[in-house]
Length: 113
Length: 117
Image (tube, rainbow over all chains, first blue to last red; front, side):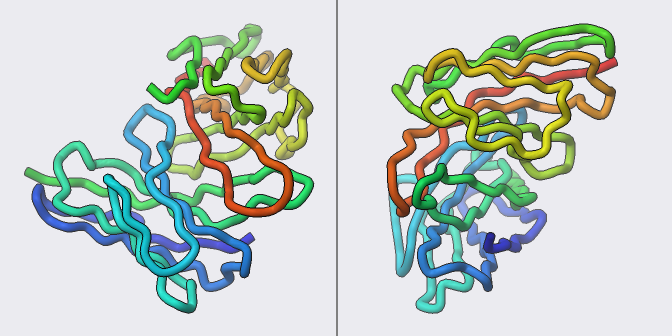
């Protein structure tokens, strides 16, 4: 399984753009990159997923360079409600088996007024 | 609201008690999961059920016993737990598809906060 490395914590202020980078040097050819968000005392929630280049949805953007050894989750104009833990996952669905996600420690983002 | 519900939301039990956690998903998914999240530790996958069959058991102690009577319901039976088992227990579901490819999105419930005294 490809291992991911993220900053343990980040601080930001309301209205700023936040970029959280995840390193995954051993990513396999078939692996996808998925980000989840977790608020205190809740389960994680899917944010965005990509394989290469750039993916954007109504919540965030995901930038993946050509070598795919890292990825950056970009949250535009954060608000206090974006304070959460953000997890970067790398993996793929296996033939003949289930997808088994592996969550690391994530990045604890605190947004200040 | 993710379509996955868990009861109870909070549970306090003694080491000699027997209790059960319940999870129900209203999404029509065919795979369900139990995770354990301890303070300051990553989520730990405990069990995976695919089409009601257990496909993964991540070396979980036998004092945790899962049950999946159908694809919508998942239980975690607890007995003779230890204080270090205190944690947030999360249930998740996904729609598993055959063959290799894009990972399925997991939908998590709100969790059961368990305290073992």
